[in-house]
Picture (cartoon, chains in turn red, orange):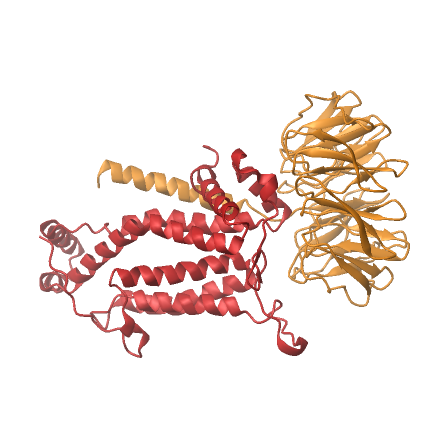
Length: 274
Length: 359
């Protein structure tokens, strides 16, 4: 336990829950990944809500007149600026870490979910040995292994690709046409774009960074899917779609971001915290 | 910041750090090893190495520069002087190398399989029988690597096939042991092992009985002619390795680290408490004085015929690969140790004064 707290607290429980779902639904790993992602998203729903709420309060503060005034007034005195910001936080009852802590708590959960999918697929001897040690005694590991990794047209233990017509081959796409990588990139782009907060300032560096992220993140995840087991891609797609649904249910989806030049300020209806 | 919040951050940080460290130490390599009288052939990571056993120097490596290959399967030295190696990388190639130079012998590698090569193939006369992770057994022309036929069994094949001269016997992760007739290319019989099997079966000296272990924590003695189970013996954990036959005794290990000495006719274990140190995935190596086993904790143990440790040596790292004999030397290929290969004397475990680091 103390030699591997990550395995004990996160990875092993996650792997066993994933395998339990797999067992319960009749040995369909693709469906198990989808249900497991939904389960984790449901458990972390309150955290996401708290994070969004905190982010909204901080975002509203950025357009507050008093806040903007002190930024200008104490632009050259960082110490005074910090103390004034703290005063405003205190007066308004704002906790600047309110959106940060839920994100930090979710972070290991997301990593754990990703790692448990990889571990359960156990595509190599070493990963299978690690899986054997992760499975709790009551789970009947011998009956579960090998996992049925076939889902729809995919083998979830391998990178996905549909054969090119006529036996055509490309050396940089050894597994064929990467349908799932494209879907992952597309849903990641949509999720990032739709959930970007509207910019209140044309010179806002955070907005610029978010804009860069909306380009690089889909490319990065698409590249991951090209090279790693497609079981991860199923997780990415499910997670992205659920993320969009969750934001939409909380009224935080900014559909205008999909339009050219659409990242403009949205009307705010959140009152100041007193 | 409140004390409880600070504590939460520290705890979270510690768990995340342990996630990073466990990820860093989680390589996926699994060395494969073979040796002849003068050289050791090591499949390790992205390369195949040939090392001189006289001084540990490198004879050659394949390929020259790291590419898309990754090697798990033990290289196979064939009677006609080839070294067959299968890649677990994205190339999924099966290659024939010259054991003396490392040069490729087939004009093109065999790339007709749909997945990676985990197990070493079997050469019989002029045919190579190669099991693939895609669940198929491929029969190739030994001289050229050309495909003769393939037989889909279904689930990943991680154990090397063995033969009695007529049939080919192979385990599968699908829980079955199969007997295949290479002439008709058909499955003659299959026997349920109660769990996946990643090792090879061992044949009795008279070729009538197969001994095989499985993840069902059992060892089976099976009639080679019809697949009927003669006896089963329980183990305390998964059997990953190949059993070893020594006359009327079968030596088997499990991943809890126990070594078993089973009676070949009844399956009765005469070593109820031989648990050297750490999980064992590599097969035992039969010696004149007993058996040698290697453990995940990086130790080599020599056991006499009564299960008593006669010597032990630590080389560090983790040992998953079965030890291989060359004359009176025992060659070890650990994972994550300081060197890639070690050689010890079979009699006393004294280590040779060289270490092979692949450079």
